[in-house]
Length: 345
Image (cartoon, rainbow, N blue to C red; front, side, top):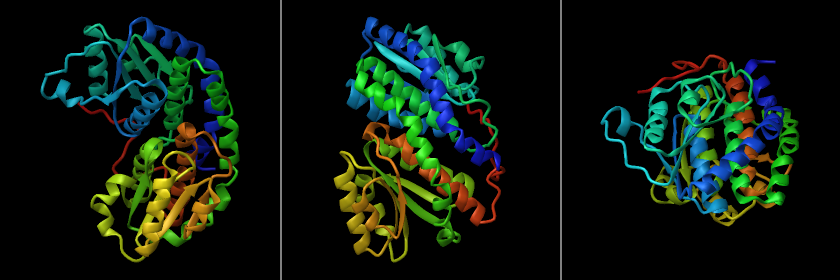
């Protein structure tokens, strides 16, 4: 088994470890958030971790009514004009914990007296040393350049913190059921592999999600670019209608991420519009009606709460992208121009 596929398959075990090891710690962080009367969250991240931060905007906004902003590290490193902070939780999310610009945001927030938290796979990294609280991802070493298990671990850690703040036992039970849901999705790998030959010569596509899965659209577009060199452009369904839909012509591939939930009706409307435009629709969904509209249905075999669906939908996308890379005779272990740790300043 290739290293990348092995790491994709490890994800249920990673999430189980994270649940067991870090939930008590995140409850303590939640207590600190309440004690310090935190009113907003600022997150510094790059790459896949930045997509996890996008998920956090919807997660903490809907569950905890906390606004989430994404930091602009260049304000710190290029312009030396960091914003003034007040009553904020400042988080750094980084698989390696090594990127200097993310570390700089956390260091400045701590100087300003803000509560700081690092989510990282390396508890001895520069980012971990800079933050007041460190939440290890417990993913084990990730050798593949493309982030898979560390990405879903970041999403799980964010969800655990939101649930700890909410103090909702039912929500916690939904989280505890998630690793078993991933087991069922991973069992469909060979079925997903049967769909990819149709897209062997695909050179570009759009990837559409909305709400919680807006982040998934960006993460899957990134994976398609990294591993298959497809020029994949991510959008929300709303933004796609504001201009980019004009590129759609007969046979143009559009990957639509639409598990059942609050965003489903809008996504269903878009899917029908794409049908009228003769687009080639690939659909990730747990809903039979949506899958019937697809040229390529990528079925979610298990339904989860919408706020957790980015952890399940992205795994379907990871498997699709991995198998597509093989169909294109590419090596998913050695994507051109990339290395595992990228340091930006």
